[in-house]
Every structure is written in C-alpha cells, then in structure tokens.
Length: 452
Ligand SMILES: Nc1ncnc2c1ncn2[C@@H]1O[C@H](COP(=O)(O)OP(=O)(O)OP(=O)(O)O)[C@@H](O)[C@H]1O
Ligand SMILES: [Mg+2]
Image (cartoon, rainbow, N blue to C red):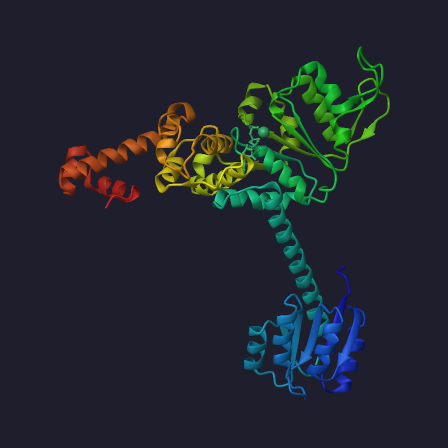
C-alpha cells in the first residue's frame, strides 16, 4: 500500500468539502479544507501536501485554474485534481495544460474519486522514485566517473540503473580496458549496499593454492603459515558487493566451490566447521569468450548461469568513437591538473587522429596516451603530429580485430561496384555487364550500399 497522502481540498461549498473529507478518510493520511484559493495557498505553504483537489469556480481573487498554476510553480511534484461543475471540455483541457493530473465533474461520485486518488497516489510514488533514480544516476556518473554519451553506453547506464536495486548477479563482458571495473563500482555505488564495502578480487592473478583461503578465509592453524584466523573476500564483502574480476580464470576446483556458495548462500572458512551466511552481492567480469570456454569445458556452464543472471556487454571503444573527444578531453583535464600543467587543448586534426585510431587497449589505452601527451608536449596545443605513431588507423587493424568474413566481402563488393560505376560513367547497363551481374542485381546492391 502506498504511503497515505496529505490532501488539501478546496471548494467554496462547505458540504462538498465535508463530503470529500469523509469520503477520502481512508485514502488520506491527513486532510485539510479551504474555501478559497488564497486560503488554500496559505495552507499549502505551511503544510506538506502531495495531493490538491480543487474546484474551478472560487469566490476570491484567484480561481481554481490559477491555483493549479501557482501550486505547479511552487512544488511541481504535487498531484492536482480539478473539480468542475460545468464539465466543459475546455476547462478540463486548460486544467491539464496547467499541470493538473486529472479532473472530475460534479456531482461528485465518491467511488470514482477514491479510484482517482488511488491512481494519483501511484503516479506520485512513481514520479518520486524516478526522481530519486535520476538523482542517484547523476551522482553515480559523478562518483564513478563514467564518461560517455553514445547510445551504446547509455544502454549500459540504463542496465546499471536497473540492476542496482536488486541483488541479482551481474556478469560484465567486454574487452580489456573498456571500463568493466568502473561499471562494477557504479553498480555498487548506486545500490542500497553502497554504504557497505566494495571488495574486488582478481581471480586471474591468484595462485590456485591461495584462492580458497582468499575467497572464504581460514581458521588459525588450518595450514602451515595460518597463524591467525583470517576472513576471506566473501566475509569482507558482507552487506556489500564482491567483484570477481577475470572470473573465467578460476581453476575447476574453485569453480565448484563458488557454485556451491551461490546455490546455498553459505560457505565455510578453510579448516572451519561453522557454516557462514554469505551476504555479498556478486558482480563478475571477464574479457574472455566465455561461451567458447564453456564449449571447451574449461568453464562450468552451471556456474555461468548463476553468475550471468543479468549480463552487461561493454562495447569496445572503436564501436563508440563518438565518445572519444569527450573522453580525451576528460583525461586531458584530469592529467593537466594531476601533473600541475596549464590546461592544454587538442587541435581539430589531433581530435580526428584520436577518433580514427583503433584502440585495441580501449579506454585504458586512450587514458595512457592522454597522460603521455600531457607530460611530453610542452606547447599549449596538442597537434596530430604529437600523437604516437602506432595510433594511425589500420596500423594494427589485423592485430586489433579480425573482421567477420561477411563484412570483408561486403566491403570488397561495395568497392568493386563503386569502381565499376565510375569507370562506366554511371551507365547502369554497362556497369552491370562489366561486373557480370544483372541490372536488377546492380540496382539492389546499389541501394543496399547507398550508392547513388
Ligand atoms: N566510460 C569511462 N569514462 C571514464 N573513464 C573510463 C571509462 N571507462 C573506463 N575508464 C577508465 O579506463 C581505465 C580502464 O577501465 P577498467 O579498469 O574499468 O577496465 P576493465 O574493463 O576492467 O579492463 P581489464 O579487462 O583490463 O581489467 C580506468 O582507468 C577507468 O577509470
Ligand atoms: Mg578490470
């Protein structure tokens, strides 16, 4: 049930006011009554009303429509319902235009108005929740510093927002340096666990012999060197978030152990008897092709399903080039400050060079390049000449990414058609003959590749 509303009822007829007050007693937490708009505004300013129900015709200087406007100005999140005796469409439209949520016509049907108040309460709550989410997102963007405007990243941000309020496991997949850890932190920062710890453990960097104790902790004397009891990551992340980085690098034995914790919600310290409850939200990440690893049998499929309740795919930087200028500028400012350099600027050709580079190391590589430029370029402006030579587009395209065959053939086909059209002066029949295809096929392919 929604929280009870504070309702302000405005009508010049006392029996209508009283009737509404009685009729809505169950829906409202508190009701106050006013006979004029002026009186209503005074009460409104003193109180904390979420819903105002007002008649249109009022005896004072201000009418109900004017009251709607004034309340909208003061507190736009207030839900307003207008009562109209005349039931004219114009009045209703005008009330809605001024921000009213709904209108009702006299004579008042109490059942109907109860329904409308219920609807208004739901609407009000949704609005409040959305506002909170938006604030928290803006804050998280600030907090975690996720920069980017492209639609792919906006999708990721939306997913972050959607999952943050749940305890569902999240598996973040993306190439090295795409921001997976940053995203894991943002999920934590936005969640109700944000006041708890964020514990990150890199499973790729951990020798197998230490992994179990690292994750689950150990009791004193459980093995040589265990001189005291030590809590593991699961315990440290209690009421917080546990980030399992490079989760695919776990040896088979640890995969079984982790699966058991996810299934039972319990674990034991190494050498311990007591079963402990796990209260850590699990976010994991990998830059490997996890489905291939499952096919090959190096990663457990059942574990994958447990970890992958919500998948988040982070696109590589070359698929969100529109964000490169923004990111470059962000890192430029950041490193000029950090290295106490006067603020530098990128010339347009330098920006173009950055945008067209391949970035196999993604945002981490861009960040490193910008730091190097801040340190090595003494001029105030950074030109394209200053960019590292290996950034030139296609310099490393074969290492960076092997395109799917279909993409290669399509590109070659497009170029061949372009060339044939140019040689044949855009004469369709000749071009088709030259390419050994029908005119129909040529037309189809031209429209497909946008060649006109
Ligand atoms: N959208 C972004 N806005 C600003 N900085 C970013 C963004 N994405 C990543 N970064 C920065 O780029 C660097 C690499 O990010 P991060 O460590 O999160 O990548 P990763 O995907 O975990 O890489 P790896 O797979 O190598 O562990 C960090 O310094 C991070 O702060
Ligand atoms: Mg990482």
